[in-house]
Length: 572
Image 1 (cartoon, rainbow, N blue to C red):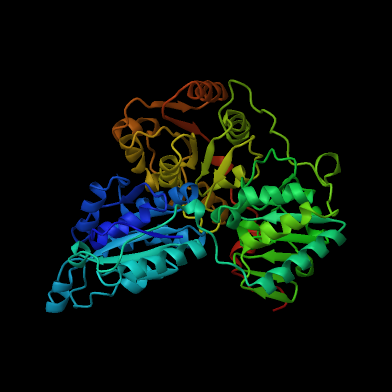
Image 2 (cartoon, rainbow, N blue to C red; image 1 turned 30 degrees about the vertical axis):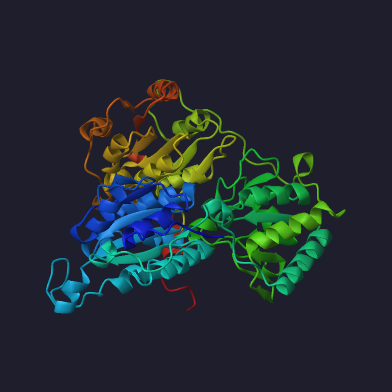
């Protein structure tokens, strides 16, 4: 629902920022640039927006990704050409992981274009829209905003970005950005009040009939919720469904921490042959009904290197706006309507399973036992059980891409701890800027980042931005001196996986962070003392933990071949 604002006509850029701030976005990540100065200037004076001076455009996009995960949407601002292209990797990640990040780009003025003037940040060929198609490919919708179209186009762009939960690309010619709009301004609703498009009634009723019948007749049902529920704000609605149905659920690595892992209906992590607990694999694969809430991503890291074996005939897949059950397909059906409809039906029916508590088919993994004597060198076996006990209720755990993600995925999260990771896009270095975005989006929650030294070296500059913005994260860097995950999958040891040795614990001070607790742990005793000291703090902390490089030995050749599939199959 929208209502008209007053009669004053703001500029194109001021109006666009107003309209996006209406969604609840409070920060703009980016790097200033000459063609984007109208946007930069407008953010600087905006009453509801704060500029976050990212170290580079890639980091800005990563930070916006993290912010959108916790706030529901985000903004990143770059200049034309050199800036927008630098942000592309981060925006492609947001595209893959379904996050509405609005990418605002300042472009040369229409006066430059009309005269055919050769300007910087171009190839000197007078092709001024060369980069638009490239940047637009990292979004689900795009628009070039002008005084005449900004009101209508913004509604189209916002609607599409939220409908698909994916990035949007907006360009502002420098001169047009400063001109007053010609339409009537619109004020929108905050994200929490925006709903998916209504379903076609006949399709929706058919889906609900099918679901109700299949749930009633199933003897071994299981539910697999996905991050789609989180992206559309449906986690609470999903919890109501669990209460009404009595069904139990598991998550894949990509969907970890969707609900409290202390929830009585939680079974564990389904990951094909790498499921935890191991017995969960047969529970999911032998189920006579698998309800897929959101569309499972059957990616290698999300299926135990494609080792999962789900029977398509048992699956009802509830995608964002369509449903598939075997060879039946239902279109124009929103997942929010299906979730609300089936919950209402189950609340008033006699059909309810009892798969919680003593009736559950498998118990989730317990807390890891402590390993390592006080004088032993720190390693993964001693670190992760202590991290599990270090985390406290309401923490946001951010895992960078690498070996730490593989280990954290198998870790049962303490009560009310949520986790953010980038399983599908898997861009090493995402974690540090994403943790910045998460902390700014939810300032009342403690953000705990776990990153490897290889990933951290790619985007470490955002530690300085963390200090500048006065957030209080806990940054834990696992230092094994190499790209550990690359060493696992590169078949033999290679010099190119070796990292320059940094003094990590000195970095926050060097980057201007004031009042941070900083330390280095090389033994189990130092690790325990450091974690205890950090948990006594109110401020930010940075801990380097030494991990033996020998842990990252190449996987077995047959496992690497499953991942890469580079050899000719036998008998071919």
